[in-house]
Amino acid sequence: MKRNGYSLVEMLIVIAIIGILSGLAAAGFVGWVKKYNTENQVKEMYADFMSTRIMAMSKNRTHFVNLSANQYTIYDDTSPSPNGDGTLTIGSDTQVLSPKDLKYPVAWNGGAQIGFNPRGLAVTQKTVCVYSTANPSYDCIVISQTRLIMGKLKTQGVCDSDNCKTR
Image 1 (cartoon, helix red, strand yellow):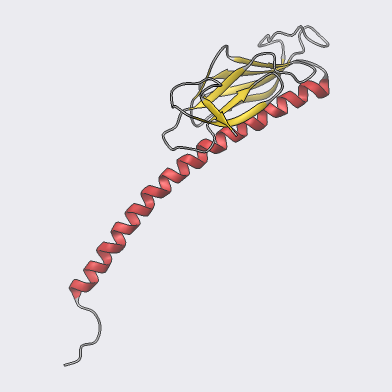
Image 2: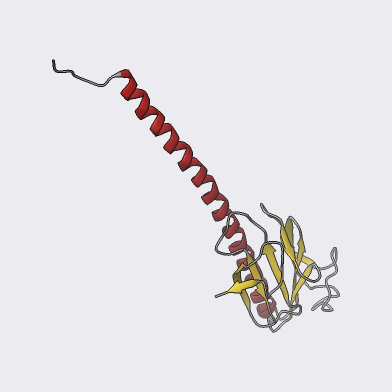
């Protein structure tokens, strides 16, 4: 006797397999999104730091990035007028970028400020890191006097230029 269609058991097995595969795909997708968001945050920070450096050169005046764990703010050294004194005075210096909130907290070595002098050189050498278990391609930025370089941390939890592998 010839039978048409599928039995109930066959249908349940197919539905179970689809459910398992969907669950695995969703877990992988969540990890991919976290990795993407971490990399995106590092790239945005890098772009803002480079813009700050360029503004310092174009205005011929020191500019600062003020860091905190969950945000950063960019300032133009305008106090005292017209070209500032080379130090950040919050409340007196002009705020160029309002506090930019970060999705993932950052850590850094040294003080909470990154300064760029009128020639675009970083006044302070620093490494800024985003710790993540998502294994992103970029999770740190090394700021030397003449360069800003994105990299990958060799060891999570250690934020210094030796631990940030740049390409």
